Length: 502
Ligand SMILES: Cc1cc2nc3c(=O)[nH]c(=O)nc-3n(C[C@H](O)[C@H](O)[C@H](O)COP(=O)(O)OP(=O)(O)OC[C@H]3O[C@@H](n4cnc5c(N)ncnc54)[C@H](O)[C@@H]3O)c2cc1C
Ligand code: FES
Image (cartoon, rainbow, N blue to C red; front, side, top):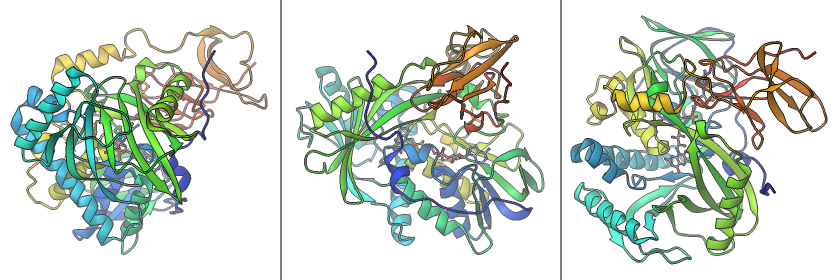
C-alpha cells in the first residue's frame, strides 16, 4: 500500500511569507547590469552591485525567491556536512581553506545585510552540527572537526550534542545561523528596486546576446546592459556545458508541528539515511523541519514514501506532531564539488554565470554573488580562482555524469511509454505514444484531460509524471514543467507544446 503523507504540499516559507507584486517588463530598459533570476544568487549580486553605485535590473520568471531558495531548509552555515574532508582529499587543503573562508564571509555578509537593510526574516545565530550515530561516522566527524579547526574555521569536536536522541559525537561550528529564506530574499528585492534599479517579476528571459551592450530579451521587452549575470540556478542559454558539469539532485522536507522545546541549533547526520534538522518559529507556531531522502533526479521514484519516512523520523526521533507542510526541490551539483562563477561560455565577455551551488547556496550563492560583484567593479577577489567557471572539469567525471544521466543521444530515459488506449484515471498522468509522438497526458481530479508533448524542450529526453507535485519532470538535467507545459524549472527555456487528443 502506498503511504500518503499529510501536510500541505507547499513550502513553509512560501506559505508564510506573503507575496510580492513587482511589475512585468513591458518596455525596453537600459542599466549597468542585468541579472536573470531572483534567487539568492541573483538578488545578492543585484543589491551588492547597486550598493557599489551601479544600476541593475532583476528579471524573474515567477515571483522573487520562490525558486529553489524558497524551498531550502534555511541553514546559513559554512559547515556543509563533511565538505572539508571531501575537498581536502579531492583538491587539497588550500582549496578547502578558501571554500571555508568564502562561506564564512558569506554568512557574515548575510548577517550584515539583514541588520543594515532591517530585513525581518527570523535571522538567528545558532551552532550547526554534523552528527554521528555509528562508530564509522564518529571517526569521520573527528577528522572533519580537526581539519576544519586547522583551516581556521570555528570548529570543534563534541560529544555533547543537543538532540533529543543519543548520538556519539559531532562537529560543531559556532556562530552559524538560520533564517526564513523567502522573507530574506523579499527584503533583498525591496532594497534593490528603486533609484534607477528595477525588479521585474513574471518576466521570463527568452534570449541573450553578448556584446557591447549585452542584451536580454524577454517576451515583451529587452534589457540592454554592460554586463549580464545568469543566476537562474541551472543556466539559461547554456553554452558552457554546465549540464555535463553538474547534475540535478532532489531532496524532500517535511515541516511538522513541534512537540517539544525549540532546538537551539541546526543539524545534519553523517549516517545514512541522511537527515537535516532544524526548528523554527513562524507566525507564533513552532515547526520541526526534517530534510533528506535525496536522490539524483534521473533516479526518479515515488515521493510519497519519502515524505512518509521524513514525517516518521520527525515524530519518532524528534517528538514532533503531524506534518503541516511538505515540499521538495533540486539543486545543481558540480561534478568536482565546487560552484561555478564566471564566464557563461569560453569566449563570453559580458555574460557571467552562477551555478553548481551544491545544495548549500545560501552561503555558496552569496559568496558567488560577491565574487561577480568584485569582478564587475574591477576589484580583486581572493575566492574567484577557486570558483572560476572556465576551469577544466575532469572529463571522466563529466562523462560519467552524462552517462549516468543518460543523454538524449543514447537511449532517451523516461517512463515506460504506453500505447494510447484510454485516458489516465483522475489525478494520474502517463506518457503515451500518440500517432508516433510521445505525449504526456494528465487527467485532473474533475476528469478534465490535458495533453502536451512529452519531449523535453531542453535536449529531447522524455518527461515523466510527478504525482506528488503534479508536474512533468525530465530525468536528464532536471527541467520541470506544469501540467499545461509551462516551464517551472530549467535548463529548459521553452514550454512543452500542447497536443490535441483524438
Ligand atoms: C531540499 C534542499 C534544501 C536546501 N537547504 C539549504 C540550506 O539549508 N542552506 C543552504 O545554504 N542551501 C540549501 N540548499 C541549496 C539552496 O537552496 C540553493 O543552492 C539556492 O537556493 C540556489 O539559489 P539560486 O539563486 O541559484 O536559485 P533559485 O532560488 O532557483 O533562483 C533562480 C531564479 O531564476 C528564475 N529563472 C529561471 N529561469 C529564468 C528565466 N529564463 N528568466 C527569468 N528568471 C528565470 C527562477 O524562477 C528562480 O526564481 C538546499 C537545497 C535543497 C534542494
Ligand atoms: S533534456 Fe535536459 S532537462 Fe530535459
